Image 1 (cartoon, rainbow, N blue to C red):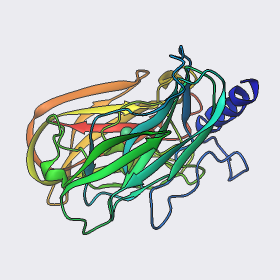
Image 2: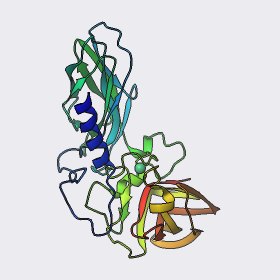
Image 3: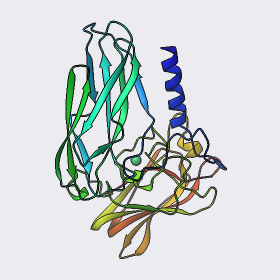
Image 4: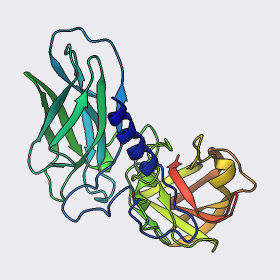
Length: 309
Ligand SMILES: [Ca+2]
């Protein structure tokens, strides 16, 4: 157990590695560059202790009973689901979880293997990539551990048909002025629907590449002309990396129509993890964040999510 805990601590620390001024690619890099033919890997594995039922069974588990996988989005921002297994064995043992996914979808791992004490649950992120041209519809994801198999339907839909809760930016195309390559900071991660700062550097937020040089910009295309009156911005904010130290401090919110941009809101002196900007309704086919300064060393722009309503 001690070895397992130590290994997990290393993984967690690496996943939390923050891009810093002058940082270069090192052996500590928490995530490889996105692969050409499949989703990037995410080095986050969680273990939850519990009480074993003593049946000797392994049970595959998933964080949701179905997965919505958007079609036509940047390959750097695949759909994500928690997968794992639970051990009801009497003794600690190495356990395997096998992952099968219906073609042409691809998954970031084909198996998950771990030393697992009795009663423990192991969870890891599985990334599911949808190649361009995949027909919309339902595909199968199967998780097999021991004698049990768990089926999780994967529904492939275009962003137009994705339930977006009113967020017009969800899964829309994103472009940014630059992208830090020290770890995994794809611009598309600001429109992936995940507002949590957890897993920073693992593909859940954008970090620009121009330390202490401003402005930086990130644009979200809305997929047509929409009426817009609210933008919510989430910047990096965790216990270890609070927004007051590393988050975005000053920015302008702009809306675009046919390539003409206008500033509709300004935020100055922010130290919070998220800020809501309301403004008079305007017709727009794109929204741009113009980042002007960050807190602390005022070094980089770090944005977890941009929501548009
Ligand atoms: Ca995100």
